[in-house]
Image 1 (cartoon, rainbow, N blue to C red):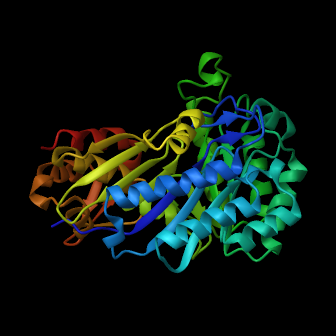
Image 2 (image 1 turned 180 degrees about the vertical axis):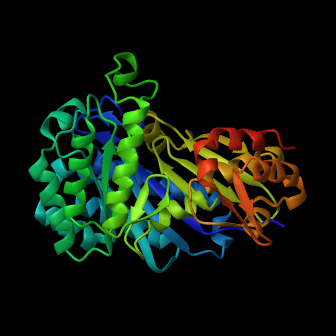
Length: 389
């Protein structure tokens, strides 16, 4: 039987000061002033249409978390963020202690603005540092410097946020082991409650894809990860997902809901959503991608914000479930599979047995656990679930 999981909301702010050469997100470099008031109104109207289309007014779930991502959401004024959060709260009741995360670029942060975001309702800031080295920041197209990154982290400590995150990359163009570990040392010294430490990958439709830089080889990348992981562990951080490290009690609740195959509404340019229904349906939604087209829906009531809606077929659910779940290092309760996919365990039993024989997974009566070997062959493991009917 399919049980509706926790409900979150993602709101996308598509603008940034300039497009980074590695970025494949739906972001657009600013060419004129942001139509802030109009866009916030469009986000809330987008939400209204989702509530009506999917009959969410009858949904008993309280909102578990909000993530305001981009682009660079910190280009929006604190008043605009407050209008957005207040507007969401007026439409969907919040659970107590709701986590509300907003991404921020150190180059767009001022002390007064930072505190004002907290006053607007933001409980958690995710700061896009990426590196502390001036040369690497320039190669990555970042608009901030090392001192701005340090200042942003120190501000986050002083304004009473529940938590904050530093985003840090490794495996950067021409980056040595010593440089990568120095970046990590500087991040650890700032003592963030949460640290997202991930390897730079070259994605299609980016400048780096058309003009590839020289990246560290596989052996160097392994050394960076192994020694960096040791540093993080010694500093009291626990790795709970592939690139997520936190001090105890500071895991990102919004991301956990993604990886546990939870539900989330997606509002804003190109935003993705996933919703489960008591009748057994699971759907995925995508909103109009370009700001001009998205705002045209606000200006013309005939145009929809919704770009695409896909029903997740029963045969696709095992792959989708494990593609998300195996990002987490925690054991996966077997009951979570049945309640969030609506499928019986017998559907995946042959593949689970094969995965255990390959030492990709271990299992007991109630849960599965991905092994260290399984992490190394994750693509092979996930591909096996794609064949399930």
